[in-house]
Length: 391
Image (cartoon, rainbow, N blue to C red):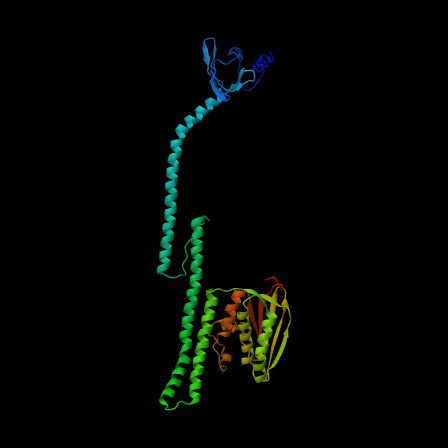
């Protein structure tokens, strides 16, 4: 029979694992087999069958993995190979697991305890650092462990928050100090005017006008200081949109053209069209007005003020020059501080907030301001430009 011959050939063919098989006909008679036993009923599945071999009174342990297959004529074929080595390996793995699982469990418990202790120590250190900072100054920072893990990220975030708070608190402190100092003079003048009006049975219009002028000066001071503080601390919503700097500068120039005429100043303009930036139109307009106001305020009658604007690489370059007294180079940084006024500008009334306002606006817009003193003052204002329509 062909099936019997095929099974016989398979048994004698060299292979890595010994072959096992059993062929039972439809009446239950064994046609061919080298398996010692098998289940009475066909399971149509893989079976593990003890296939011990007895030679010369010695028993050799074997185990076969066979597929129990029902043939079409009712016959049954079981065919497989020896897996005793795999069974031995399974036993070895089980024995190893019995030995090493307790060790692994112990290591896991000890490792977990060490990790918990380490994390706990770092959390305690973080908590201690935060409490120390709360009780001292905002200049302290939480040290990083250098592990670049979640706790380091948390510490870095807290440090960034502390930096923002330090800037805001420092701005508030400087503002309060500056306002307290600067308020003395206008408040003293206002008090003097009010006392004069109180002593007079009929206050003169001039006294009332001077008092109102001081009140207006105080209101402008408070408004400007509040705006600069908000800009420096980053508080308040700020939406930057595409703005036409050519139009903003033209509007500012139109506003100051009449002032130039009143003061007998030559006002030269050269503003290129199509200069666009991303920013706040209101803040940039006020900055341009502050720069023009300074140029005209400190230029004597008969002098000249010039406003130029053109594209320069990736910037909008705005040049404002005058023929006034200028500012000595060692004071160029100081004039950007709030309430600071150069000695040469003392005779001219002012708050000393105009350039501080421009500096605060520049920080938001990524702009810069530089000064060149010579015959007068030359202000170079650079604002990053964008392509029209790019938003």
